[in-house]
Image (cartoon, rainbow, N blue to C red; front, side):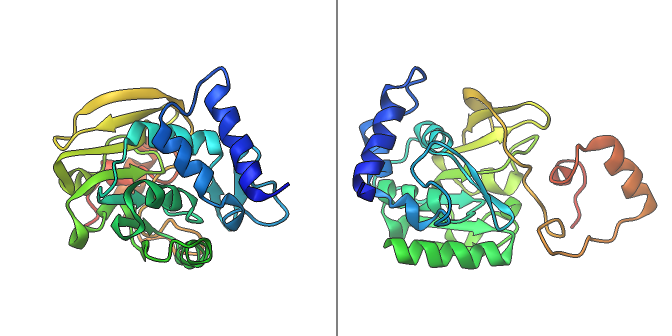
Length: 242
């Protein structure tokens, strides 16, 4: 079966399943247009509703991607920042919604950034900017953003990302540690919407990405970190490394 037909079947199932994951025409059309097989390894089934682990990152399932974008509510021309570029698939969906030249993405792991850039170019979204950054810092030189999508969990919205929102902007992220909820946050950092339970990996800070050296910590920091955090990815909420 041709990829376009497989995409149609995939989106039809998301529109008509019991959860009604795809509720807007815009998100449905974007998912029908993006060639997901350009982002999923050939040995995987690109158009099944599954997530895949690849190169130290997770390729989100179509259901997860649909839920993120239904919550994000992107309009044409919106400036969009994707934190956690991964293999580039969600950035491609954002490009269909907002226009590729309006989409920026960051990821903390360099080899993942290279793969995202390559995948996006092969799929026809070469205008999407992908940079290697600590996602908690955002991308200040391109701010403000109308929409910020964080594809990793944190206890609270990272301060820099909230600061980089436009006055009427929206940030969508998984909030929480052990139990996460997908939330929408306004430019004041206030949660203005909840979109159900999710389970995402934590938002990493510099020194935690794959292949990186662990940052040095004092004995006191080690004790506080053990008491205050659950695994990697939460410490920017309790200690200011800078």
